Amino acid sequence: MIKNNSEASAEKKLFSVSTIQRRQFLQLTGASALAIGIIGCKKEETPSLTPYINTDNTVDFKDDTGLLNYIYALEQLEAAFYIKVAAGFPANFTDLQKKLFTDIKLQEIAHREFYKRFLGATGIGTLELDFSGIDFTDATSVLTAAKTFEDLGTAAYNDAIVRSKNDYNLVIFSQIASVEARHAAVVRSQINVNLFADLNELAALGAVNADGLDVILSPDKVLAQASKYIKTKLNVINL
Amino acid sequence: MNILNILNEIEKVDGEIYERLNPRRSAIKDFLNVGKKISIAALPLALSSMLQKAYGQTAPNTAVIDALNLALVLEYMEFQFYNNALTVTPNLIPDADKPVITTLRDHEQAHINLLTKTITDLGGTAKAVMPYANFDYTKVNANVNTNYGTFLRTAVVLEDLGVRAYKGQAISLIGNNAVLSAAVRIHSVEARHSAQLRLMVNKLQVATLKQLRPWIGVRRNDDGTAVVPTTTNDSMIGALSPVYDKDSTVANSETKTIQAGMELTGINGFTEITVEPAAECFDEYLLTATVKTAANLFIKAAFQLT
Image (cartoon, rainbow over all chains, first blue to last red; front, side, top):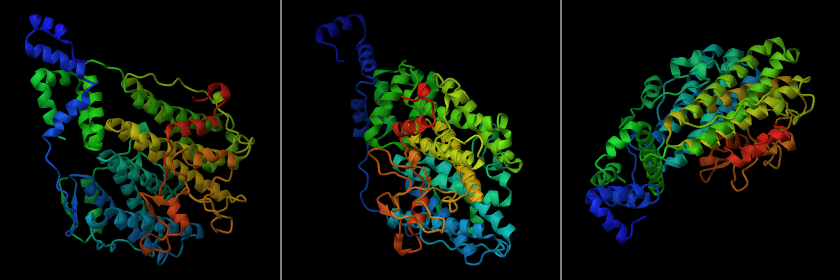
């Protein structure tokens, strides 16, 4: 890739030095991008190795830790909601509905505990939540709230997959995104079977029926909708 | 790594770097997107890819095209299945269920249109339409066109495969956020499809599938207990194992309960998280080779994926 001396000196007669450098650079692209990468790396600051401990419910979107904490907050919300539902199902819930909602409750608890352990000291604490707007004795109220949480969760996960900076986290988000979508379809189907994937109705959350595309919503929009259920103050930064 | 440092260094030897990048805005945009989400170790490779695009080598990104074309085959497979039922054997579907099957069919058609356009826009060649006759939908049972339960169970398997395949292709789409965004939004639609179809199978209450759930995990007996060993998936048909089992070298079967190195069964002292929710709370991806093997179960010999 680097020209031999005779070729290079011949070219010097025809082109300025900078032109030659440029031409050599053009030949380098692709084959030796590694070298260019090192040029860039040389000027990089050495990152601090002090472990970060999250003491004030910080959700810092400068990296994936914030994204994970944001999703962890949503999982706390979902798990707490279904725990409350399962503690006393609405009177007209069918046996199948009780079974399905118990399944969902356990899966959301598993998600919550997964993030809790995954984030460790970098994680936010246990959030204080407020479900005062939901009538847990009324099936319609419960189903409507569940639908809101699951569609919002699916929209948040779809965005998080695209937003994640680390492909390891991308895979985790994608693994749970489809589970949340399953929940959403099941809850919607309890309201009306033809709502299970009603992308027209979901347009407000970013779905596009003409393209068969599901919901997707940025964290600021999701948090704006979720905040009425979250009493603990989250320190959201760099969003 | 500071990307601007790199570009500044390049500028010293190529004063036209920014103009060079500008006419191909997609190249720099893709790159900046990539920079956000890949490890430093992989960055030189991504930089190389971006610079190749910027410096005139405009060959389409074959990994992205291949990923989209694989997805397109699965969409043809699903679309033809639903469309045939709705148009050729409409008596198979109870009237009450026709709107659901129609929604499924229409979503798959929308996905076909979107994938075809995206591939073309990226400079690739979309896989040509595969007609119904290219497929073999008899793996669950040969009575697929006369038995509604078989029809629904076959649909479940096709959708579950789709969900796993899109998940597996997401990695190939890192760096192209527009395409990745579309893929993940199709992915969750497929998951909604699977859940709805699984509910419909459950509703039929056929023996051995009375406890089938809308989420994938370990198999439950009709009395509700989990099948032991818990490595048995909930599909009930051995021939369908490629759809639910692991990739050859990756422990990612749909029955797995360990995620990110952590055992989810009983996680953090929560004993109620038994093996069923521990397996169901995460879906699993399938990589390209395994997706092709599974897809070929439903494709006639002459048209199989290689």
